Length: 419
Image (cartoon, rainbow, N blue to C red; front, top):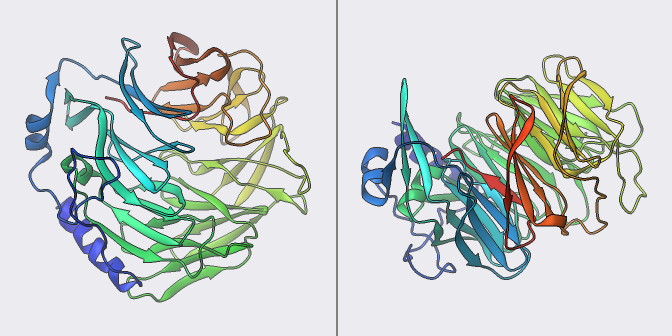
């Protein structure tokens, strides 16, 4: 039933102004080939049996980018189990199925199979391992930008063309994902989300400025819109409510209702966010100097979507755009330049814990340069330490580093799965 519902969503997107995309390609061949428009069939169990070996327990793995490519690291053994060379500046995002990652570089998003995954069966789970590798599928884009995995649907935004691409991440295991596309009015550094109710959320802007958010129906009708979000950037969900950052606060999108959340400063920018499925409060950054070459803020923002209120919390340390995360219980996590993960109660703003992880660091001026990055899966946090070519594994429940993995390259971005 899940895939049948998504097929309807994919067909719907064609009405929004673009045709279904994807042409035939060999998933085991060159990583610059296109994915096929033909969807794979069969159950998850059948797929697991055909391309994986059942494991006794979960095998969590990391996708770690570096100058020259991406590597897959086995968390338990610390072994680098795959090395994939790629040209250009390489970024990585979760694909949304717990198995694959989308690696953006010149030409679009490459599909990376981490080679470990699991299937839940009520009171137990089955875990599998396979060969970690680039599958050969490429989701083409002129300037691959934001990737949003939400509610079983993954939406990609091409900053260079304004094209919005939607896929079912479960299709990635077949190597031939069926995709559909829509388009923003103008190319811009934007983001979009295909919702389960068949509506499409997208940012509004052009190459010079961005102004707001629009909710569009399957027929292309504008259901709701706001132009009160200058410099709109990023998106995250607090439970099932979307929040977009603005240069003067944020906007909360709940169904067809859009509510402005104003910052206390004339310029109070929220540009990067971290949401939670179990918390109605969104964690965001907060900057107040529009003229800074690089502002190193010490305050974070907490947007409560229940009443559209904004709370600012001063951490006493700065952080970067790769510092935000959420714990399994919705706790707000911020990796500070003091080397610690600061654990914040999102409802009260109180700091409940501090976990020392890396040495003190300073954010580089160039945003593409490596700096410590935080990625969270359940109750486990992964923190890179580029200065020492390491990644640390942190048990959030116990509040301490449980292992440290040495890497052959200097890490930049990191994505983990649960295995």
